[in-house]
Image (cartoon, rainbow, N blue to C red; front, side):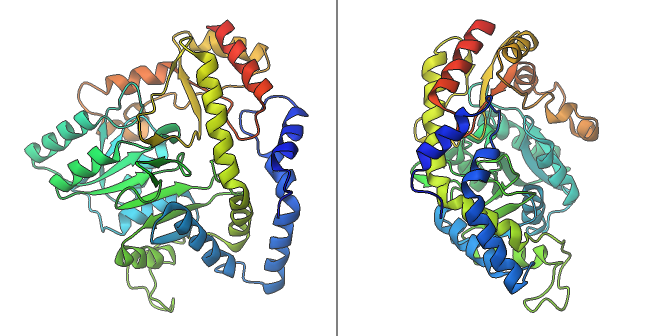
Length: 387
């Protein structure tokens, strides 16, 4: 187990070096003994695939999220693909996704064999614009070429999408909702945690995520037992319960025991890390004030702060000035999806104006649980000076 003096340890470790955009080193040092003990157990029992760590992790993930079932998979992208395959989507099925997110969301739709329909986002939350979503669904029904089938609501930067409205829209049209929670695991809305807000959820355990392993990894969550059974089969090459006969098309989407052990160790400090992210985010917001635009967090939503993102007009100049002050920054994302070459065939007429404008202005600042108050304050001063 990690040392009881968690806050003291991580503060001392974080103070020892430069400001990091993501900090993978501090938790690695803090949890190394615990992780190595878990790895030793795996070396002893030898179940590198499908070991007891997998089931233990799935139980803890479901318990944390308040979902009935959790399935560990090989990546966040696999989680999306398997979820879509589990609904047997076809080429004439329209899957509505926000145009401003990582390319994995669109890739998953196309790999699963369906058709993406891009939706603009809200300028203040950066999440899918429910008004434009309804308009796009109506347009697809009217055109008659595709059947509105699913909505993938991405929780950008860690902020839950407007699930109350999205679930209502989906129900009215007989559609399903998949939460792409790759950046938001640990967040909540309306008193319920990410993973239990809609029909199904997918998350990523890429090392820099709020809960990250030491390689690729992901998970899927649902309350539907039949859906969970389909996912379990698809994850293991589409085989039956005894893994002998292929009963459906599947993939190799398993998460190995070694990565599950890392995640089990990280879960021992996850609640503390989420509290730290919230404290750091509020210090940023208070310190920055009106100097920059920041992502709006609606009442009742708890942002997981997978990223802390602001909007600026002179971004290149600001990034250069921050770099000169020892403050790393990054851009999520340079282009909306409909402007990527791979997805250009699905670009809506007239484009997606808000997505396009955000792509020119967003700038993410250092965000991880091990930033000290002094480091946050230094970033704030540097940003104010740069803008």
